[in-house]
Length: 388
Image 1 (cartoon, rainbow, N blue to C red):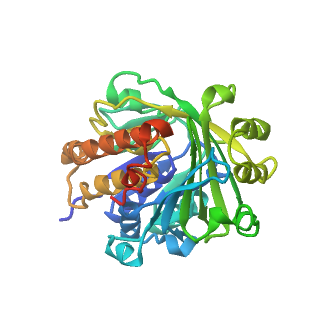
Image 2 (image 1 turned 90 degrees about the vertical axis):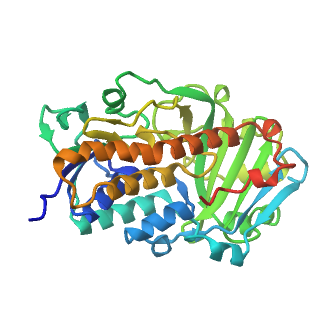
């Protein structure tokens, strides 16, 4: 007689939570997601889906080319402080090299990815409950208490509740406070044509699928196309002290004048590009970091994604590592597993994933160092996104 499916509660309906729910449902388990927000207005700009992420999404029947993914073709590093934003390093990924990867590398709009995962999860039979903030998690009983007092019990709990995870303290046994990395990020989207149709800015959009980084001391600007090449995702990194108080979250409105002031020493073409940022569209968020956790698993509860290992945005691996967590966890929880063995398999999940994620997290911190410390002009390989 086949064993009954596990009942799994997933906390959080971000990329990590939706992927976890979909992968677990594909294994035959009963999955319910508890999401604190109403999901009425999804947030975020764009994300990198390197081959390690794309291959796993494809295994879940999620295909970025069906929601306007832009295929990554290479990157350029420019000196933002030089008069002409001089090209320092150019990396072009040849078609033969791309063909050798396990899957394509896509640049996608986060909202498009989120919508695709949500749609696929619904098709698979995942139950999604919104407006359900979780207040407490019991690792021994796999019980979750919601803000309204409702208590839900499952066989396992997967906590994908992000940087400010409610479940993290219960899992780890102590409180880990986030800390500022010293940098914050302005972000905005603008039409690709704003680059391609301007004689001064066309050099920043020479070829489709190319990521450009403009560096200058302790600040940088990164932009790349998404949404089928129709939009350019832009991010500008500056010392946090230049911005003032920043509220938690993704969507605090940024001050465009402060953005322009922070890059006043950059090339005229760069300042012109910044000036084209649509009014009212610039957001800012503090880039917070967290010490490496001693464990991701306690009893019948496991952390995934930013709840386990928040990433700074310097390597394009935050979403990819959450997707790896999700699929690894589901793989270790097959339909044939008995409830009494599930907690042990959560430990296996940590053993399979933690060392790798910790390493990628540390490499990301290194790539976030100021330009003078990275010395990328002498080490161009340090620029290339890891197609891991």
